[in-house]
Amino acid sequence: DINGILVQLPLPKHLDDKAVIEAINPLKDVDAFHAVNVGKIMLGEYDFLPCTPAGVMEMLHYYNIEVSGKNCVVIGRSNIVGKPMGMLLLHENGTVTICHSRTKNLAEVCSRADILVAAVGKPKFVTADMVKEGAVVIDVGMDRDENGKLCGDVDFENVKDKCSYITPVPGGVGPMTIATLMKNTVKAAKIQNNL
Ligand code: NAP
Image (cartoon, rainbow, N blue to C red; front, side):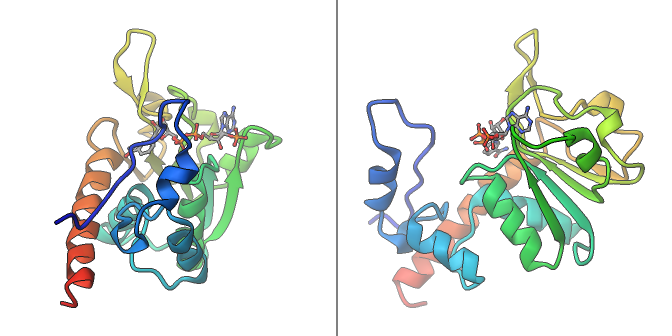
């Protein structure tokens, strides 16, 4: 009766994320967190892609933004966003740098990016000096500003005039994640029913 299962992370501390994810049948793992699906993504032979990075790729395709040969910088290396995001950009022949809290000269690394993906979880973390003129900026962040208002990882107001494309928060990556989840669920149902 159930075709797709998504574990909304993070789980409460007393629950073991890994054990919960590994308990899902990989064919129903519509956010591609199970080790089998993670491995398939590494190999480039997958049934499902994690919803958030896949939604980002869908946006790039929709707007005909070429990835091949571009300098792609991803800030964040989580299993659910940063790592798979880097892998998908690599599969499309981007030259990928994945940054994290130990990265040195982050602003300088980011300012070389043709495509910059922010998945840090810190409000307005990416400032205008970190963005190259004409860059494509994808903001995955879902944060709260000092007034408790939803905002992204990018300082949108100060960055928007510098880049060629930028995703807003809310209304950017978030809805794409949900749409991709639906797409993956339909695909899962088809696979399970040999359609
Ligand atoms: P996470 O697991 O907390 O990972 C954050 C990453 O940012 C880590 O790799 C961390 O580095 C890095 N980081 C933290 N501080 C940094 C700094 N000062 N400089 C450079 N890198 C730094 O978060 P996540 O689950 O990937 O989520 C990231 C953001 O995306 C959050 O705001 C989340 O709410 C949002 N999100 C949105 C969607 C959507 O559909 N729109 C989906 C998922 C997540 P270390 O690894 O070194 O600690």
